[in-house]
Length: 477
Image (cartoon, rainbow, N blue to C red):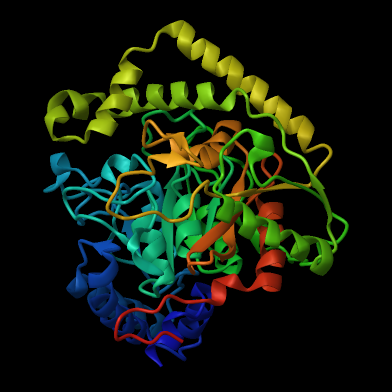
């Protein structure tokens, strides 16, 4: 019964609490019991505060009983990504340099979650400073994939995705610069949306005008992605690139009929990237769902991403140096080598380097703008590889091509980050070894709603997200 309850959607659970069919205390006790049972296997939630969680649930129930006005997330538990501040909780960034740090305020995303009624119970695990798409650090160790405990859960929102996939929490916040929402969503068989820059305003942010880093939802369904965006999206004066549309745009009536849409696809980015054969095989199997079941017009096509590599690498290094200069200069000996390599790359950049990256960024944006004048969406694999061993930092090669850094295998996501388009990772099938894969749906500029709408149509037709992980001595329904 507990598993059945905890795998209900966040929106269903919120409605049950509002209608007093379920108390926040009952939901919280069930969530905490599951965390005690499952989290030792996957290490997704860190800095858990059970006493504070139960107190928050009791306060939520009293507020509802008194007739107080409550928010859409009222009484729901959430663990906040350990790079996002939550007042009174540790925020370690997965780094020994911050292992004893307690947040004295909330980041904007935490503020909105709490204002909507969500109860913060702890944090979700991350790689150090969210650098890389494999979640491990020297403070809390490694997060493991709930579908295969020997594999990575991805990152940097790996703890968030593993926790949601395992029924520990109904939804989670994540962030994405080079794929940190999409990789863990794909590897954990959940939904992760990289929204358009500014869709979810970010504060504080060292580079407030940069479009590279965004925040977004991790959920078990597109229904809950809409639900989260309806509250978390919308402008804020502290975030200068905020999109002015309110979150309420994600509550407008949804039509699942996407027949007639013209959708481009490529299993290997038009030959621009090495993609493991098993990823390509599973990806191509999904095309018939769009064509035969959903009535879309499919065409194999992919824009050139020739500028994406240099633009992303330069602008990311610039933002790393800007954001972490004080920390790296003070605590460099405590930070992982791969992080320091990227930071030092940022230190070596010149003004003309930044100027060239901005010009490349400009060219890439307009190429995709023109591409989406012909196509409604672009289908791509999320990852170039299947979930790999949790005991390595990153794959050493793909199809025989060496990967020289922890970023090299992530191009299938960060090429899209460089372009700035919204991109959804949706459960996209399983490998022959029963490992999850993700289908990446990329849309035109600011077409977040349409990307989710296409994703929901595919989700309903394919139903891959309904396959739950099974843990030792634990049965999930």
